[in-house]
Each structure stands twice: as C-alpha cells, then as structure tokens.
Image (cartoon, rainbow, N blue to C red; front, side):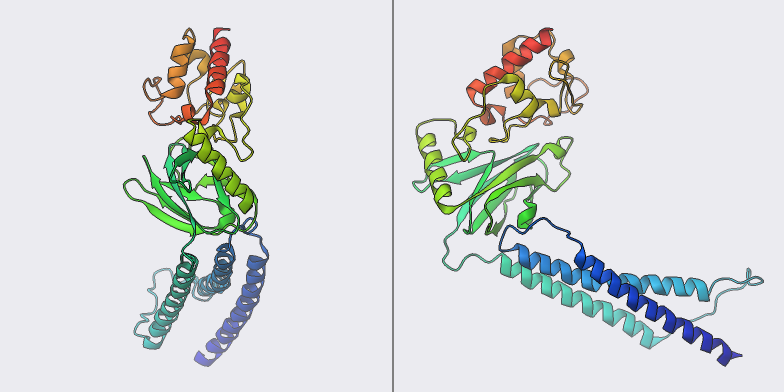
Length: 362
C-alpha cells in the first residue's frame, strides 16, 4: 500500500516541478520584457535597471515555487470524507529539510543584499576629479525650492531645477515641515527629505530635456500637485543660465521668475489662475480652488466664490502671499503653497489679484 501511494505522489511532485520550471521561465521572460521604467536619463540608471532585472529573475522562481508547494499540499493532503475529526500526522524533526529551507533563502538574501550594497556604493561615489555641481533642495507642502551658488559665491533660488548634462550634481535635501521624497524617475535615484536632517545623493544627467520632479512620499492633501520640472541643459547653456541668474540676483531682480530662456509668463490673471506659471513652478490656483468665472472645480482649498466674496484686492493679495495667516473654516494650515510671492513676478501677482477680485464680485 505504502509503495503504491508514494509512486503516484512522486509523479505528482515531478509534474508539479516541471510545470513550475516552465512557469518560472515564462514569468522571467515576461518580467524582463515589461518596460517598467521611463527612459534612462543618468549614468546611474543603467546599474539600477540591471539590479531590478536581477531581482525579477530571482523573485519569479521563488514566487512560483512557493505557490506550487501550497497548491501541491492543498491537493495531496486535503481532508477526505471520514477524516473530519482526525488530527494531521505528527511530522517534525526533519533536520535536512529545515537546513535546506533556512540555508537557501539566507544565502540568496545575503547575496542580493551584498550585490545591492555594491551597486549603491558605486553609483554614490563622488567623481574622481572632485568637480561637481551642488544644489540645495528644500521640500515643503507642496513645492520644491532649489538653491544654487554662483562662481562668485552669489546664492539664488528657483522653483524649477536646472542641471548640466554630463556633469555630476550633488543634491543636499531637507524639509521644512513633513517627510517628502525627492525623485526624478528618469534618473532612478530618490531620497527622503526629512525635517531636521540633510540627506544627499548625486547623479550625472546624460540627456538634455525636461523631466518631472515629483514627491514620492504621501505628504498631505496637496501631495499630487507637488510636481515641478528638471531642466537638463547642455554645458554652454547651463553656464549661460548660471551667469544670467547670478547677474539678476546681483542686480536685485526676482531670480525665481526666470526660466532657461529668460522669459517670463504673460501677466494674464486668468491664465495664471487656470494654468499657473510652469517656468517657475507656480501651480494653478484652479487646481485646488473652485471659481465659477474660471470654470474650475478644485476642492482641495475653499470655494473662492464663497470665501473671497466681498473682499478687496488687498485682502485677496494677503491671502495669496501669506495663506496661513487666515484659514477658512474646514481647511487646515499648510495646505496652500506659501511661495507665490517668489514664484510670481509682481506683475503676475497683481494681475492674479485683480482677476480674482473682479471674478468674485460677479
């Protein structure tokens, strides 16, 4: 009887193993075929993608193996009619099995962690020449601010990130309020912005263009709107931009309002309200506020037709520049960005105030 039972069970084990091998191979091929990430935009991206592929290759057989064992046991050792009141067989003490299921996962874990540590160490190394750009990144609800230091020591800030193609840049990241996470997906690298400490990482951008800067940590009601842009410029254009921004700062101009081309947004109050000013990171008011005249229906902030009805331009401007000074009932402090005085030029700010004042009088 015992031999007759073991034979079909051995065949079931071999069949399950064969199916598992086939499914593992198919799963690995699908995992490697899927384009998980956007196009690579830094020298670090290739190593990160390779690490991801290695994890996929290791994870799929483990998932298939565990699932196969569960399904095999459910089929072979399921309760049969008449066994409802019986206990299972008292199986214990299989030393070989315990050694195998402990040693193999431990060996895989140590190997993968060691490999990941080597990759992380390599991509975080400073350039051998010691020459790299540095940008101080500050996260707050719900915007990023980037501070640069010119060749003459002049400091200036922007709400759009500008970096040089082919040059290593180190980001020193901090937060004014809650935990954020500074991330440019094309560069693959990301790091938390933690109140009270400064974290850092470095990348070397390889492709010019404009890429999204996002917060990868749920940081509050406006988290979804904490999106700005990273501009990767060729060396000559980056040098010209740095010189222009330094000169504007020295001359006392508003540097945050300048883009790579030195252009400012049109002082159209309704356009600022509905579209924002992408060049400086000023988000559209209509994304969070409802205003009938603009046709917006945002609900993150108060309905402006009700909250600002009867208020004069001075009060509206005060609410934009210092949104935490007076909070509408039902809404919390720190939700609205407090940097519109920096991200908008005086002309844009005045145009926005005039538009809202006129719209809320209707």
